[in-house]
Length: 57
Image (tube, rainbow, N blue to C red; front, top):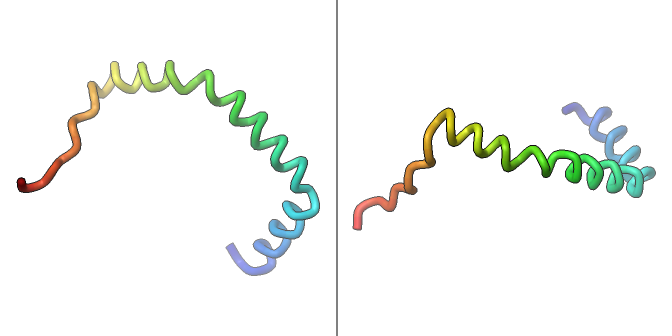
């Protein structure tokens, strides 16, 4: 992102901080119900996650 765009974004978010926080919170509330079904579908499609590699012991 160039400096002008960064400065514009920063000044806008600073001026409308409360609106930004409210919008972010609302978006998270809307996204949370889709996480468990998405995880179940991913697990059904790709199988369970393998255990982490512990390296040489």
